[in-house]
Image 1 (cartoon, one colour):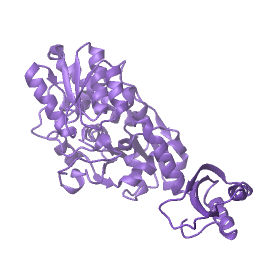
Image 2 (spheres, rainbow, N blue to C red; image 1 turned 120 degrees about the vertical axis):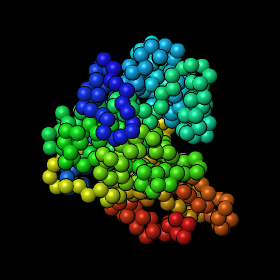
Image 3 (cartoon, helix red, strand yellow; image 1 turned 180 degrees about the horizontal axis):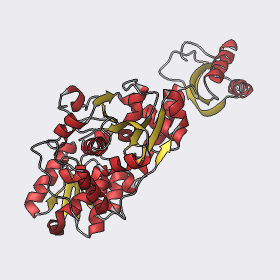
Length: 408
């Protein structure tokens, strides 16, 4: 059974039965994803915190929920095919939904879209086309294609059937968390946040629902629409324009919206990998970033749920995140040592490093770009340490023997 066409003249048109119908439309494809407890985060933020692992969803993100409901609602209209513009997660969700319903799917992606997401769309049988400089242009390209061909255009978030599909996540939270107090949801266009908020608050109005955006692309926080392309780890939520459908829903149902800065997104991604063993993309990690920035005050009682909305980060990005984190916490130490350029000098330095239990990851001779005596060389060392205390011992030991200097 397909849900009715909801009116958008007010923000009160959705009913729980609409979300139940959306769940039926996704049955057999959409997963009921787990809620994972986190002792580390609970201790860190002095509150009971759990993680809604939507990064483990089919296609690696929540978007399949809205995609399945939209295809069901289209019925015979989908027979000519469906088309969308997306940075990747909506594209994958729609591509799998189209494959499930046996219809053609074309996706327009912006330049620089995640290679992982593009490959996944093609795996599900979609045709992927370059759609311009940003998500907004890609969406317009898809709309133009729909007008030309008669294919059904499927908006990534500003669509009532998509909102109803995303709301099924809220139903799962109500079923799985008895003492639910606060839900923190990543916010891009607003389909997931608005749907989740309505589903929860219609049954438990006391539960706080808070959205998290990325700084520089946070129109729900600042009211400003960015004029230029946004480069961010949270590319999946870098949506400049609030939706005509989702904006009034968010204004009515959501308690608060905060924004977080880019570096904290990187820190949150690594923390989730290291402490929770969960691979989460930047847009999915902004809720944790908001806690790290003290943007949200948690209650001591009740349960706070962080929605990890997706896990489709390019795998090539991860080594850079890990190196950055290890350097930041002094588990990766970068030093420079001036040596006489003679046989045996480097061996002596390496022995000192070994005696200090410093594991050498990388070693480089530097003879250009700095002032050196003609019989000197500079050695750049990248060392693995056991942490900040060990890093301090290594620095002190090398300084004591005269190896470190103003070039360190």
